[in-house]
Image 1 (tube, rainbow, N blue to C red):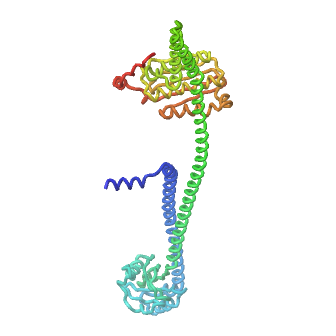
Image 2: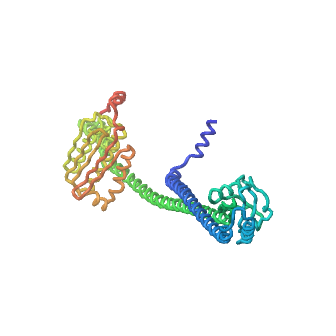
Length: 481
């Protein structure tokens, strides 16, 4: 099971490029998702308010229309009703006939109920006339006749319920306006079906939903295009950076190979010019000593002493070449003495005035830090000797709370002039930077026409504690000639 889980995690692991792409696109996707959610919610809320306002305006218009119709009806029956007594049956019949004749539109009509619930006028639905409909409710259980009567008794008002349309016999929403003829105890009213209002509102709501959905689709498409753009831009940038990196890597590889060949040539020349010549001289001296020994010449000891002196000189020369490749004093005594030896040899070879300052480190830097700082100093002094045209160089090494720092200062022409001549600003500084990067340290280069300051710092993690130093074995003594 653990092995299976390990395989799943390995398959789901992202490489560096995928992680960068996720870090780039994930905030964009989350931002777009949040914007989409906010836009959708606010659009729906705004649409709901607009639809409610539209519905309210349409229904209010219908109510105003009902009032106008009822005003016409009262005007039509006003002369009869106003002059009739409460029990004037002739006047009542005449009013019923007048109201029955007043129909309008496709489904518009006036209706009359007495306060007992009997229908007196219903010209489009005559089957209601003459019957008592008290307690009648619509399909949703909403009281119809009782509420109409109560509204008329209280002076008039509106009531809404579901009712069958006379033209189609289909049930639809109906709004009625009712007034009371109190002398005759009649409820007079008229109604308008608002299914067209509800259809308009439903169409508006559907249109709003479609608009919101279209907006969401637009946002998704824009997001996809943006992600595609990020992907393409990242791909192009990656390809460009890879080409540049490959070009720089090839150039750096060529420079490293050239440097290696130069170093090998230098070692070969030194071996040929010094060691080889010394050994050839020793050979001739020993051959001469052998001939003198065989011939009984008393000068044989003189030749042997000269040969021994030549061997001693060869040993010193080998040590010098070895010290250039890897100084033993760096491992035995630490960075300070190694740098002192390096800068003294530099002063002797170049006749440039030098200065060395340091504090007692007690060899507390670890092996990697000592080698890196020593090689940086070697590289800096080589650059000064070849290109800086300086007459003063100083090296200062000191410790601090964050670690240790080596500062190399010269009063030469500056790195910009040197790099223009021999590319020192390329491989030399790059080697320094790579060495210090391996230690997770920092390299600062300040250069002007008045000189250059190179400051290399290593972190505290490369400083050995006293306990670690006491546990480490003491360096083995070197055999001397």
